[in-house]
Image (tube, rainbow, N blue to C red; front, side, top):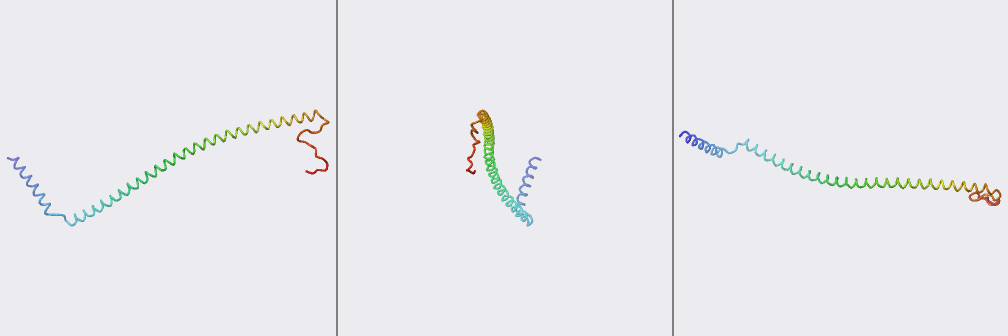
Length: 136
């Protein structure tokens, strides 16, 4: 019996509590607080939406910059390859110039030997005498 009486009292207490809350309504301070909280929720919701929008914009910018970095990596790689090719061509040019210079010295030495071997013929190539009446 004690148990049933306890259950009956608890049930009656719950019904009275619900009825009291329904009769009382909100006090003016509670209504003001609820309105302030509702405004705060709306403000925070709009801030959240703005931050989501900003986040999407930042992610798009990040993706664009990542693509640009990848393009620049390719440009740098191509530049390095061209630099290497230029160095190779420059080295080849320098070797060709050195080779031509050695050939020129050899030809000059041969010309001097020919001039020395033929004392009566005068200068052979490159050292021609000009007639007396011509000015340079």
